[in-house]
Image 1 (cartoon, helix red, strand yellow):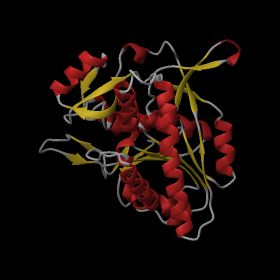
Image 2 (cartoon, one colour):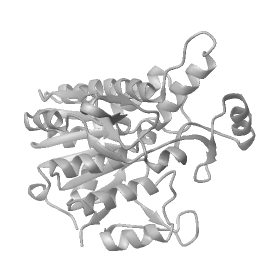
Image 3 (cartoon, helix red, strand yellow):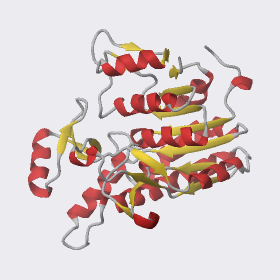
Image 4 (tube, one colour):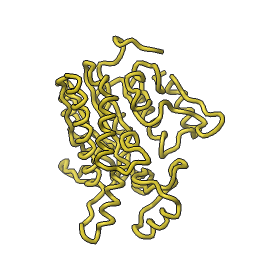
Length: 321
């Protein structure tokens, strides 16, 4: 159903996939990353020009994997950092590029709206079973032979990722609490476009007297986005990725793209195994959690079709029953 502008939400959370901002096939040079950030700014400009609250989260899977690779290659000369610090580095670097690109797009349109980034910690449970079963793919894609060689050299665990190659996998615990979420809310209410929760947030655990410390993991950014939207009472969430719609029977002659589906329908498709854990699975799971947590509509669409998707012209729209 096509929605007129007056029916569009005044409060919106937009999650940008790591592979949308750092797709396969690029070297990851500064020039490439600036170009991709600029394209993201142009794609999101129509959303930023609308009045109302806008919060943006982003993935970091490709980038944090490259950070780990760099430090392992240089480990004899530079002491490696723990994974939580690598997540913080990726969060800051990606958010810097996005913040600058989004503001540049606004200024080129003579729009004075500000864009801010909040370095975000996210609490997880140290007893989460994910720590014993790494599933989050990060970094480069490798052949099976390359993955086995790196396993012998670094001790990294690899898994095949949705038919695209082998990737290093790390623990991905569920987010429990977004630290300082009240600051995110205050900035958004003040009119700024807020970039927060990057890479799922910096994973931390809390001990006695609420003392926090980092833990080695990469939280799924879509699950963090869903939790953030629910806690803030945002009723619509967009997950922008590299594909225009969610599909069932993907990779077969029976492939069918989904337009508008109910929560009950998408849960059935998910249980039937249509969405691989390394690609569309976490996005669909996040949409389900968001709707079960009080959300009204979750949209999964291509990054360059953000406003048409919000209007209902494209994308997969998952709605509460």
